Length: 336
Image (cartoon, rainbow, N blue to C red; front, side, top):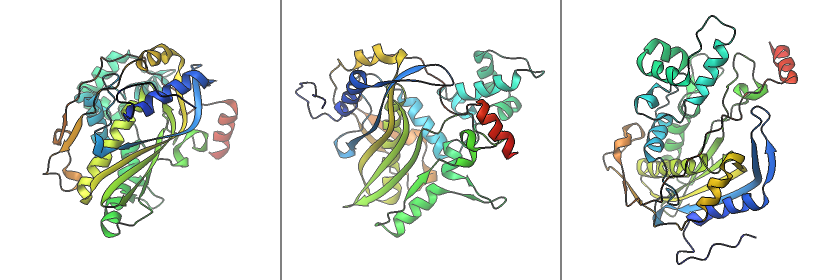
C-alpha cells in the first residue's frame, strides 16, 4: 500500500496521480514495445476520482499545456479528422502519427521524403497536401460524431445521442460513447482499413445522480507522465461541457485505467515531479451562451487561478497502433 506524502494539503486530489507515479516507479513491471523497442514500467488496473466542485483537475506539480487541451478537445467534439486545424492553432501534439504514415507511403514510392518540420509547414500552407496527408480517419472525433455503419452514407452521432438520452431519461444507464471499432484496429482490420495509430482512451459513460452529471472514462493504455495529465483535464472539461448543455451541475470525473505505465525515458522526470507539493487547483467557467453542444468554442472556457510549478519536458513516444508482424501479414492477406 502506498504511503501518501505528508502535507498540509494531504487530501489534495492531485496526490492520486502522484501516488500512482510512485507506485509505478516502485513496483512497475518492465515492458518493451514491440514496434519501437521502447521500454516502460507498467501496472494494470487502477482508478482515480476528481470531484469537480472542488476545483478543476489541471495538474499543478508541472505546468500542463492548457492551450493544447482546449483545441484538441474542440477538434474531437467538432468531429474533425485533419490535423490542419491543430497546426493552424499552433498545437502539434498529433503531428507524429500522420508524419509516420506519410513516411511509410513515401518509402519505395516516387515521393520526396520531407523532414518533420517540412511536413508540418506543408500541411499548414498547402491545402491539397493537407487533405491528402493530414487526415487521421477514424480518430476520436469521427468515432464520436460520425461512427460509420454498414448502411452506405449513414453515420451515428454518438455524442448527440447521449445528450438527447440524458435529457429524455436522467436515469439512463446506457449513455456510452466508444471509439473502439475492431474493424479498423490492429490486425483485426484489413490493410486498407487499418488505423496506424492507437485508440487509448477508448470508452466513456455519463450518469446523472442528485442533479450532478458525472463521467467515467475507461483508458486501456495510459502514458502517465505525458499523456494522462492531458487526459484528466480533457475529460474533466468534457464533463463540464456535457453538464452545461444538459442542464446539470458537474459531478465527478472518474478515470479508470487498464495499463498504466511510465516510459523509461520519463523516469527521472517522474521522480522530480513527485517531489513537488501540489498547489491549489484552478477553477473553470464556461460562457453561459453555450446552450447546445455545437455552440461550444475554445474561447468560451475561462480558466482562473492556475499557478503551477514549472513544466518538466519529456519526449513523445510514437508507440502502439498497427504492427505488421509475419502473422499479421498472413492474416491481412487471408482477409483480402
